[in-house]
Image (cartoon, rainbow, N blue to C red; front, side, top):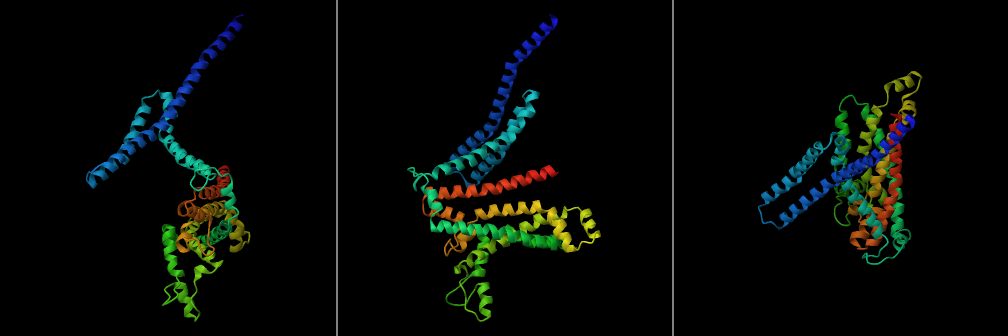
Length: 380
């Protein structure tokens, strides 16, 4: 009888505590949500009011700059400090559960707003007409896969995906191996090779335009034509020679991305255990065999990550094409078509449809990258 009573008492206690536990969890979740939302809401309100005042104010420029710095830097610091101070006043059991939401939560909220909303809105626009006034179904997507210019851009983009990452990774790997053999000046050599990465795509295009430059009349100022005419040949409009003009544009990106590949792959090569390399040499393997059968398999995951990163960059490239050829003479790429239809031709539906197709093309590459990262973490 006493056992039954004890059991009943335990059941009753557990039942009595259940609503309280649910209430505490609900309250904790509400506080987390408020902590994550409060910072961006307060910060946005303060910045909006400040910008409204700055836009309408007739104050001195120096005063305006000082106010902007105070609100944008000092104000945000005080906001986070105040939130942290508030968290420290909460019950001790709640503090460590809520504190991450104060500092990380606002970033997640802002990312959700500035990533999720544009993506959803772009998909919505892709089903509308040029002025986003009426629904036209899949007409814009039909245009993407039937228009001659779009088909050329897809074909050219596939060529960029194959050529640029492959050649950049191969040359970068070669440089990484050679630079790794240097006893002196390794940092200088790497810096020189990596230097093009510091140049913007537009800047690199301007530099290379002096190499491919062609003039119908007068002296040839382009380096390539200067060399070409030195052998007695007639000058050539290199960027008008289809399909070779696409390869010449790819050379610009290879020039820029090789340094990136070299730095990453050099670090991966240095992380290969010396014991494995020495064991292969003791077994009679030549340097060529050590490189292909020991080093390459050991850094294969890094090579894949480098190439997939370059593929994403290639899918987004439009600056080089826009500056060098304006997307003419058969050099169209998907990103360039998207910019052209969105901003130059004023067709929101077609531009959005191209953007959605481009986004869908990037998803498999991102999936491969994520799987690689997870595989590396499991090995560690």
